[in-house]
Image (cartoon, rainbow, N blue to C red; front, side, top):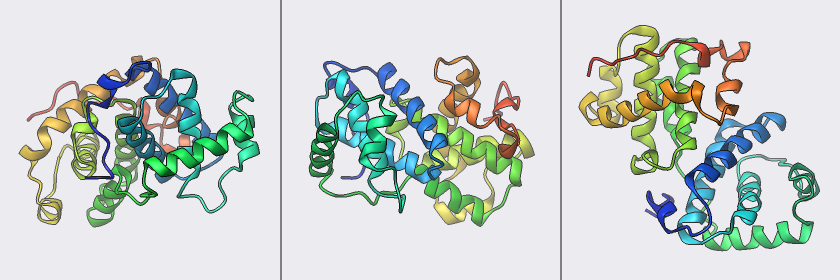
Length: 238
């Protein structure tokens, strides 16, 4: 599928690592907060970044340059302009470099910028079967954590990852996993979701101890009901 990155692309990148990518995604979360961009914009940016890196070898010095244009391309009606991006990157790149990268990015992505994201599916599930505001915020937090890790989360389709985030949040708050309405809506059973759910559970338990803290910090704010501070169950009855 053209809009999905290759799950194991990082193995073929000669100069960048999964850790560098995680630092970059963490920075993108901070930029999203600073400029009050939509959550969907973050998911699209990470999709564009991973698809670009699936096709092109990138030197570490250019990685931020790729990411910043991934941010501007689609979702916002009035995204930050090029001069603002020069400022965001502490004048690391010139306006000319940014515009050149924009052209290359669109060429590599074949101008295919409308893609399904974890965020879109999660919002659908919540709309179809409400779980309460706190569980909704927790599901959004859990889903965002998947953006930090190429492996294993790129091996799962976005609709399945969204289902796993919904299940983990629902179980944490309401002690139930996957309602029949959503099983009928998606075709996914809990056993289909279980492998991704186990990976998400691990990521959640590790989140407070990771070097990248922007997502954890974002969701400890009162407007998100401080869900990143909630105690995730140590084990799941799967």
